[in-house]
Length: 83
Length: 144
Image (cartoon, rainbow over all chains, first blue to last red; front, top):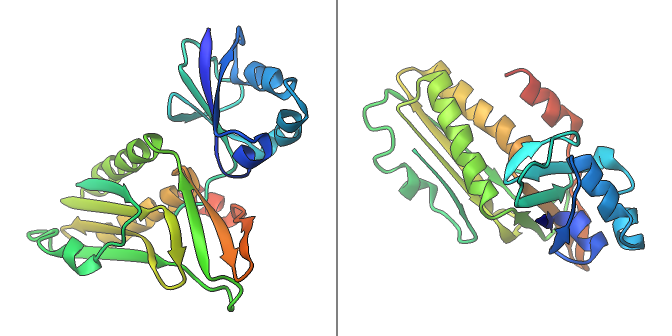
């Protein structure tokens, strides 16, 4: 299936694009990230430390082991600094 | 009962006109851009359009239920904001003071760590580091 992957803040800068459409059979977010990290050195570097990555699936915060299901949009970003 | 995300400045006085008119207690908090001892000239605030509005609305609704608020408002800006400019505000209205204060703290703790905003420092030489999340912000959230 096709998933729209969004990146924010320094993840966006290190990967070099704000979003991309990815064809994937990944079962979980963790599997999808492994696929992304294998794409090129930029993705690999940005996604090397998953403790620094937060995840939203279809705009809801979730974790690495969340099933991807029929997700349309997966966002990866650093810990949030609002307020 | 509303949440807004905008690049334009907001006027706290105008936001509070008529807010919580029958409540008894209104608390507001506003966060401003700090210079960090002159090191910064501005902050750049990035956000996740779509998710941000949903998250802020959910936080407001949760606070309203938990603290029995009669009204609440969240306004949060994005874009490049100069030192001294307001970044965001929360306002809460309740029958009594403690609920209004607690609800404002609750909303701030959720905004800090669970609303999809990211701050980057801007100094005299241009854009600098992304602001790191603070462990005590996470601790603050845990108390709720």
